[in-house]
Length: 492
Image: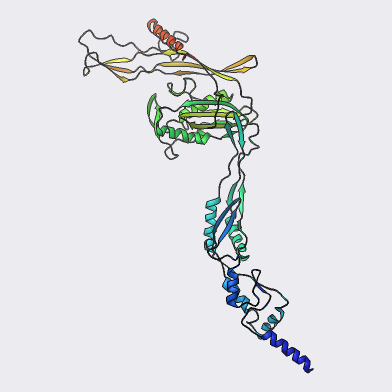
């Protein structure tokens, strides 16, 4: 009996002995702390991978990695609190519990978790900052041209950081001592245009260039802005392209600047000037690609950047350019500026159609300007007050080559009105100059009337028109054949 009591007393003496050190088999973040004083334990934890407030940690958002400091996330680890808890094992609470904790320490492992302190407000700011940094819209698959090779660039999904789930993920991550990288939950959104949708787009069907030489900076800005809205557009089989719908209103609010426009037959400053050059270039590319023209209007008089009969004027909510995809494969549009040129391409399934645009000037009217005597001018001096402009009628035919035979269809017959013009002339002391003749009207269509309802041409003016027509014929402007630019294509 006495021996048993002595053994119990010895055991109690061992388990109740306090040497000021952490009891054995106690771990903090998998690090053994047994037998260490509090100061020694603190030094041991300082050598571990437990992050401090200024430690750099990895934050993973989808495929991107961002490094930041722990306190930037709004998380801190209370290492001192963990040390206090480790040291308090067997030292705090009722004496019987202290005795039991000391007795089981040598045979049972005790893990102390480093408590995390999470600042909810700072975490929300951190998640919002990650959303601003990493959120992005999906990227559509696109078609690129390299020389004569057409390549499809695959798209990529959009990424959106899930804010509520991310805040919860931060708390969970902090509870694990922030050991691994922090992964924020994200939501993926697929692109509208995928590579599968572009299957079959393998050929440049047409390519048309028009010059930008002489265009002001504001006019080029407007063309580039409108071209950006069209470039890369994918049209499904049967879809109808609308220039006004795709480009939208050309206003200062949408970023357009003032540049020359045609208003009632005269060039005047107007917001969005230059949009018609893009529509005209795209119109020719659509014709040469074999697309069906649904709506198109010509200008009141010829424009310098494209031959008469091949222009397409657009006015938002009034005049539009529309064409339809008639093939069984999608069509991609490209509109880009390069080296003072505007380049429009239509890409689709090959082979490219063999199409020519034949334009023929069927009527020319060089009007005789009105001469007004001006006593303030010196005798014989002449000043052009209003520049005259000749009238033109142009017929355009689209000719398709199919094997040995060809098919042709009438595209348009456009009549560009003339303007007489005004010349001021000084009064001469000699006999006055004969009064100017009335401007000539187009040649008679039927019933002794010109197509526009004016009086028929006189023999004298008819002869002048014949000479002018002959002059245009010798210069090659009377009949023109337009073909797509498919040789030597370069990526732009």
